Length: 294
Image (cartoon, rainbow, N blue to C red; front, side, top):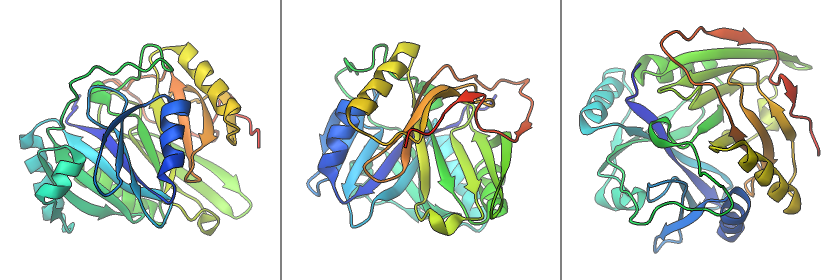
């Protein structure tokens, strides 16, 4: 199996970086990383200097998603594929590379108006990751920080870019009927994580104006999910999906609302993709649980 890319990091634009600071450290359990002069704050979940950045903005939504290539050769090959496919690619300057703590960076806009940054050679922190709130830490490594789910208006165009150009592979599909029509989702992998990126197209897209639907972090221990659920309740967060398990990736998880208004998923125990993986289609998102507490 190819494991040439991973979901390396997320950059969120925020009108209230203080709210994100307490949320990421005290509710999710990340550690503070380096900050920049422009007010951008970084947060760690493993040996990387950051996996999540919060930057001051006049909006509350995803600002960029970072894909990390395993080495400069894969990076260059991926850039060539993007250019050959007619994707407009911009090269990041030294200042942007310094902010993202990487050796090299290009960026482009994916369907859904999502800024995607392709990077390689991330910097690692001197100190080990050790969060008392998340015993055992998070499952990252070659599988990246977790997954991100994006809303798109043109599912076919988004699928073509992520699969045909970037080289992701399809894990599963899902659909369900809504009063406005059929909603569809595609779950895509680029390593053993069941999905690093998911794409969702809904007929009622105008009722959800954000680009990011949710992001997921995965703990090594099941008890960490229960502890994180308690912290979300204690913080008074909205819980759109309580504890439950998904049928496709078999993740045991819950969903709560971030300061930006999109959700985060905190999970454990997901199945991993291997060479014998069989693509399936689902008409439900939960095997059990995941009930709304709002």
